[in-house]
Image (cartoon, rainbow, N blue to C red; front, side):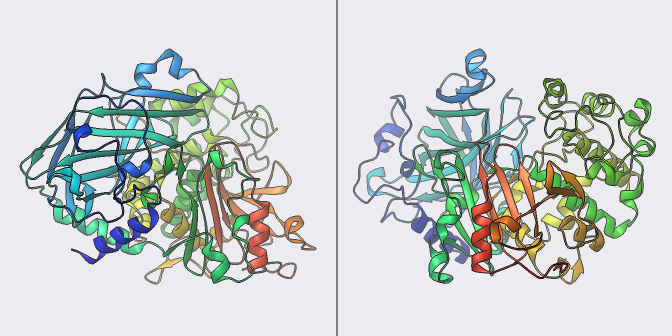
Length: 584
């Protein structure tokens, strides 16, 4: 057994608190999976994890797994449905996309060949497949049991619904039905359970890319930060109060997906609950970015590009986006103005009025680039000089992404891509982040315009390591090479007292280079402003980049944006009320 697979196995056994105890009967037992009875209701998440005392797999899995009758089998329970989709199109929601994928095993790890969001013709869902496990149990009569974590990612949007799938197999191609369920999500407006048991076909055979798939997984696994439960923070840092992080007074437990605190290179984690028990594969639980992408893609991507082209943010939108040039009033708007959401085009300066207006729906619903960019450039009138008035607009970030794509293709080659060749190649790959970040939402047309304001899928380790990179002292580097334009990053991360960015919401908030900042001095008892940069996403997603070199994040979906308690506790553990006027 490979060392990394063995470590993964031990980690799984320690984290799968919901796994069935040795000797406990299963609902999804051999007879059920080989039978024809329907799955009447969701089951414990422990049904999808190795029980205590499970044995190593009897058989490897190398080949193609195909599920059938996806459009005919499946049940659904609705917990929240703000847009009425479950009433108007229940068949769309409750049925899975077509499932026909290759897998390989490495020891006891089941690896999908294709990672990241997988485009689909399904009107609602796209798959994200994650590494699972294979093992043996005495009652499975010589077959090997497999479990696969997966997610249903919302087409053209960013909600993620997390699922689990299990089946039995052997090397001859014999395979049982595949039982699946979805019982958790990070999605404000649609909360549903899905479950069923689908006929399966297994075609064993050599997978040409098997060695590369295994090697990529081993790199991914080896790069992760050490993980400890949030409760261990009190042991490792005497006097710390772990309950300040992920506190239910800030975010109700039912709305919390995952949270963590990073200090001294250790990732303390909590959350990962579902409506049927703890999710057994937290390390690969898929998390949506929503507007974290404004910081991670538009912000960091622009600053990475500025290492090669220092004046890129001084370029003018109209020179690269024909739709904006045709709309007029864009000639003096620079890339940096769009990154700062200060293009001067808006209706209302009140926070979120424009963004949440019904008039914005055509932009978010459109799946083709021409429709999106025509709306973005032409919808709002010019009301202020560029760079003077902040107004929260996802369309500004989309315009910037369009301009950056054109800039990259003009300067680096017509077939180059801003997300693939700048963000992934220069940031994510050198950091060995998870493969889910190699893809992002794009328009569904020949343009394939990458979204820069939403659309990423992340693992918790991804956000922990990106955060740790940004809070480290000095300019972020990989192999000794700077990653970003240093002055731009200092502004983004509130390390330049002369430039705090534009006023946002009220006097205690700023926005600069795609990053938020908030004055936390009232929470930590400091007698002067202390600006904490952070990233935020729709529904209740926050990532704090604290001045003491720590990171706190949570992913939730109840519209809770409360983290004063956590910011104060981070200060209690390692004070960061520095003398006025100093910066890191």
